[in-house]
Length: 386
Image (cartoon, rainbow, N blue to C red; front, side, top):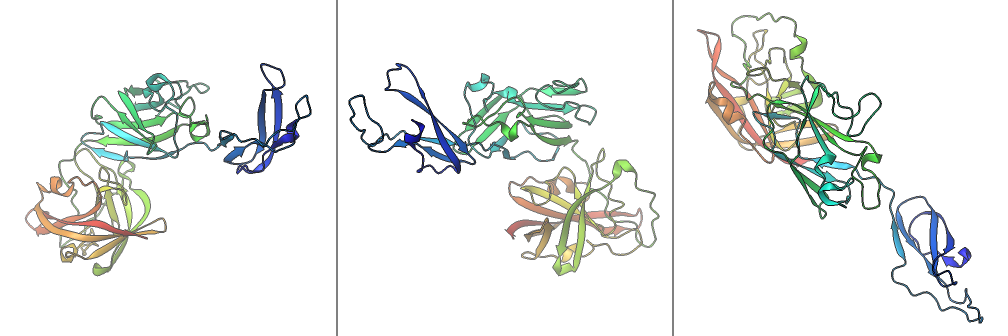
């Protein structure tokens, strides 16, 4: 009977109980044991104690000795732990990207399996032609099933999966062109773990990113010296984005809020930065891997030195900090150089795999035309996080 099944060795929490069903050949020798009552993840271990069951002749049983009497009970949904996509790209987008799941996911059925992590159909990428994602999900939803007419689906060429790291590598036909994109990793219709639990509890994971035109010039961070510059109201199309981050440069006695500056057709308009530092969209997001470019005024519109006026005084080994969400990221200066204004952008935006920050501003004022001859760039690498 069910009372003869011992479950006390189980590690799964809850009030576990067993039920028995006799199955073929239905001669009293073969039973299916079902266990219920688990309230969390763990092992369900079933055994039969000695002298609890008798055969028709009255002989007591020996204790069960099976080694395959353990089943892992798992009801935790997998989630997308991370992806190596970033919010903004310049010139050309990625030709592939990785997705790391929180646990091992199924590849049953391979590239055509409905729930397989290697099925390209389970990674829906759309180009938001009008800048807004009209597609709502991987699966049909009331009134908006599938890819919507205002979006263009991007082909996913293939997907491979490494079950040692729970990481899928998604390949595209080539580098993504300029555009605004949304990635859906499908939980509404697909991708499950080995126990059949759906991704994100049956919800899609989404990530938005843009591929911007390659800018041709760094922003002008210095106003004409010797006079006050009256600024017009900042237009909505050039509004800055709050990041809730602080840049602190102790050796310059500067501490300022970081705001996101959107890219215009050829550059960035930082006219309204004031005493803030501007993160130039298209560079790595602050504190993420890659080269983050932060700029600030060398001379402000009130005819005063700006917060980056003394950037030239930073030297190798000096440290500055980004304070973000209760965490302090410490960067140490490795390089301080000047470049001609017209050729500086390729130097300032050089690619980095690790977490680097480039501080950039104008230098050497030309009173003839009110421009600045050079750009000062200070490059620093992340050395600690606490």
